[in-house]
Each structure stands twice: as structure tokens, then as C-alpha cells.
Length: 136
Length: 116
Image (cartoon, rainbow over all chains, first blue to last red; front, top):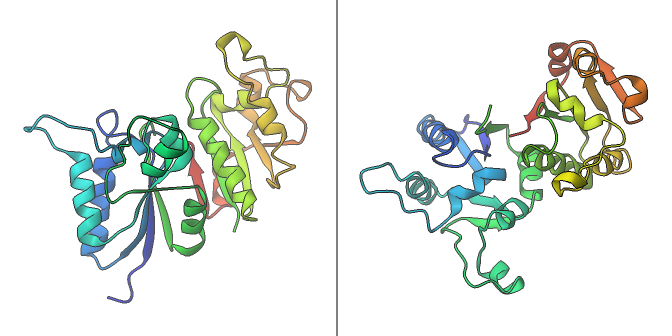
């Protein structure tokens, strides 16, 4: 399937307050089934809440953060949370915990925290960049 | 290939516009061409002499004034929205280019990002 396209997906809507993560996941799964490649999933703005390791929905409700990390692991897709968006909203990894002397960290594996440069690289290298917003 | 960032929400109500502006500055920092388009209530970003101290925020005017310095190519604004919000030439920041048709402007860009 070498004819597939490469994609960067940008999620700016949070789970439960928007449908963005759910729609993005369905889209991502279809991309892989159709033979395309996802270079990275970039969480921005409210989208970083998807990377909280502490979200714990009731067991009879869909677990969107859990389903997303399962997909990232299975498809070996890098998941990145924007550092500025994440720090504002209380999503931190061990490095940022140390840097800001915080009492805990809560970045869900396998997400990584990085700058907007990752998004810029997606603009340059991916064939398509698709956005999943909470409010539009 | 120039990326167009579209802001269609008034300033201060949410952080989405500021975060969209960060995207523009980030592109410029990596020497990637970027332009801004303000539509609808978003044109209020361009109003001169803003004072956000009453809501405990910094004005967005300073951030926007820095856009040309950082290499943002164009700051575009929807003409009809400027009229609707009574944003005349003397009320607007310098260097803003009015566009008569949002649709025609969007057609000129291959890569468009709406503020989330």
C-alpha cells in the first residue's frame, strides 16, 4: 500500500466536552484500514485533556483516552501534547514536574510533551493535516 | 506554501484565539510563511486601544502588533464584519488589509487552520 498518504491529525477538542477525540479516532482507524499512514497525532488547546492519565470514566461509558492510547500503541503512531497547552491545563510529564517542582505528573503513556515545532513539522512533511475541533 | 490561520471568535472569551496566534508565531519562528484572517466577531481583535485590565487579562493588541515583526505576511480582515462592528480605518490596527469575500480568500490558500 505504498500509494497511501501521510497524515498529521490535530485534536483541539477535549473528550466529553466535545466529540473531537471520538471523531478523530474513527477517522484515524479508517485511515490505517485504507492503507494510509499517520505521522503523528498532535493535541492542542483543550485537546490535551485527552492525554490525562487520571481521567476515569464510569465503566459503562466509552473510555476515549483509553481507546486512543490503545490505537496509538497498536498503530505505533506518535502522540504529542503541546507543551504550552498542556502546562496551562495541568497535564505534565516527569520532566515538567521536576522543572516546575510540582507534586505529581499525569501524562498518559505513550504521549509525549513537545512544542508547536512538531505541528510545524507536520505541516511540512505530511501530505494532509486534518483538524478536529471542539467548537466548529 | 502559506498557511492561513482564521480567527472568527471575539478576543478574551476563550483562549482559543491566543492559541491560534501562537500557531502563527510558531510558523514564523520556523521561517514558514503564515498569514492571519479575522472574520465575524474575530475582527474585534484588531481594535485599537484595547484595555483588558478590567477582566484581569493582558490585551491581545500587543501580541498582534508584533505579528509583522515576527514575519507574519498578511493580516486580513473581513470587510463586512468590520462594518458590522463599526471598525473603521481609524479604529483598526495599522497594516490590516480588508477582504471583500472570505470564500475567495480561503480559495487562495491550500493550508487553512481555524482557531479551535
